[in-house]
Length: 214
Image (cartoon, rainbow, N blue to C red; front, top):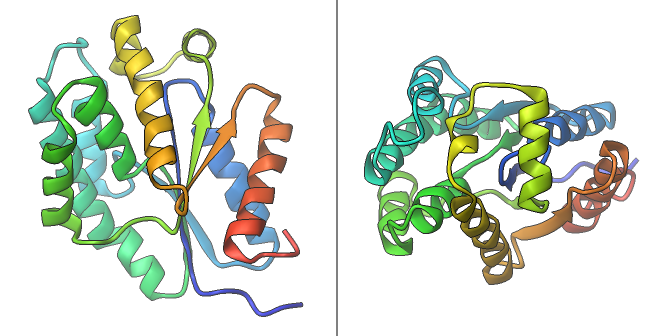
């Protein structure tokens, strides 16, 4: 077997109902089966303090927070998450798979909620410097399909209750992020059945991160 590459940080992004959590779990299982020491985490959340902030963000009415408050809460959770989970894992030669990271702040608050790219970029630089995922998988799905999936599964998320215009802007924001950073990002069609999406993701991971046996 070829030696494994250095530990990598992989994020999964996308709008509501695109299957990020499912695909993050499947990817983690597949890489662990290959002998990779890996952890799975999520944003907002991933550690005790960040999970407390998550509860503030995902509950309540759609207009509970203005966009700047949301952005600051997300980055407070992210700061804690990186310091306590992601950073230590990578330093310990573990791979990390995260359901969401900084691209969600850019897409949700920066673009879909109108704060602008500069507001998110400046805060990101202050909090994280140049730290970012090695690979970002952006799961893409028509918004009507995604919202039906969310309603069918039930759950906690106040974002699903935002208006259709918000979700259209959100989808386009993620696609624009992928277009602007093709070296880091890959768009994955989330429309097929879960097993097919998973197979496509494994192919991307193999090609981008040098894992020929995945």
